[in-house]
Amino acid sequence: MNPSLPRRALPGLLVALGALGCKAEAPPCTPGGAGVTGDSSFPATVDAFCQVSIQSAAVTPHDATVLPYDLNTPLFSDYADKFRTVWLPAGTQAAYDPQESFTFPVGTVLTKSFGWPADFRVAGAPVHWAETRVLVNTAESGWTGASYEWNEAQTQATLVAGGDVLSFSFIGADGTSEQPSYLVPSQAECRKCHANDGTMTTLGPSAAQLDRTYAYASGPANELAEWATRGILSGVPSPATVTPLPVWNDPTTGTTEQRARAYLQANCSYCHNGNGEARTTGLVLLYSETDPATYGVCKAPVAAGKASANEQYDVVPGQPAVSILISRVTATKPSIAMPEIGRSLEHVEGVQLLTDWVAGLPGSCP
Image 1 (cartoon, helix red, strand yellow):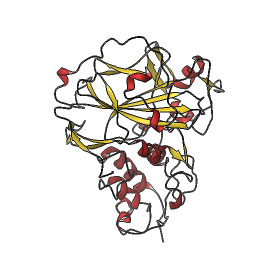
Image 2 (tube, helix red, strand yellow):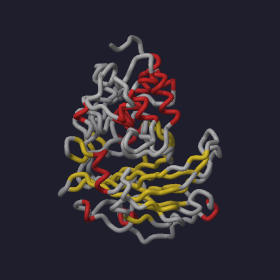
Image 3 (spheres, one colour):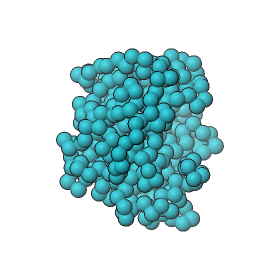
Image 4 (cartoon, one colour):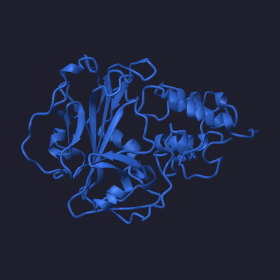
């Protein structure tokens, strides 16, 4: 986490939920990213995109052309609830790909909003939303992104091009009080995760992640089928022949190893994919990778030091306590923790899944 970012406490962020307001009636507008050509051209408030607003503590799509979606196994972000949307210019389609992220037309706008209830043990508790991130596919610069921070009243989200660090607290599902130092990324930090071989790209929307059921307002439906029905995704197989990415915390969707590898795909592979920021490490954490040595089993790190915890291998079969991967996903110190940005808390349940996977691996290292 960048120590130069301002640290701003949010008084009563998740306590005064009774004071949550609804967004005032706005004049008619049309969704889209018109006017965005690069990092310096993002509008001052998220309202300009006409994509989402907050209504009664829920992020709400502007109209029927803004489609919500979710993923089988999402990135962990300090336990945040998330709400994602996609909008494509009228008459355009994304191109289906069985393996890679979809190719979207110029003008596509994606949003992802992050928020927390005061107490995760309370079913249906209202969520206080902290930020909405926006990605726009421009003709001039390709994909470019920015973050918008919601005010306390939840009525407006303002551009924070330089990022921010938010301090607040909430009660986790296990009753633990959590106090994250939550990073609202700067525009430069967007590139840290989204740049692949130097080019900005999307991360979530893919066949394996969207082959799932979503509870649309019109009723539950498979997301890939819904995108095809709405005419925003071309080339979807019929019937679908996709192998969905396992849901990391649902044992009915895969073995411990499959779900652990899916977790690594979502949380690590945007850097560890052979072309991302971590390409020099030789560690590839894609779900599709089939070589155990390449995804860390008995693989020595390319650099030693405190981040390796003085251990010899990324993953030691049967021995999570001496596996560097487990040490780094457990750590919260910025210079050691993995992922490098995006979390300040240990994802206890995710670490347990990875620990169980490593503990169950057969064999040994030299």
